[in-house]
Length: 90
Image (cartoon, rainbow, N blue to C red; front, side):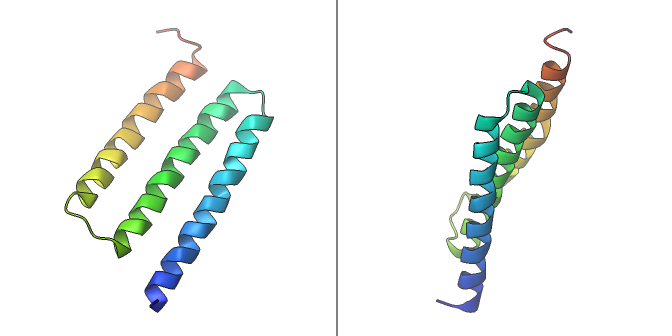
């Protein structure tokens, strides 16, 4: 393993630990707003793990997937968060 692969593996491990801590917090909390925010954190951490993995395993569609995740990760959670905060009112 090269030094870059080791650094990437450590980064993936740290993000995975944060993801597990977020899952535990989702299971322990009863507040719906907190759960909505934490679900966004899980989504973003999965995107981050994928992007770090792509650095060592290049594929032909890797960056298109990352771009699509960034667009969907920016627009849809904002709309869903507004819906949750307003309790479904338009």
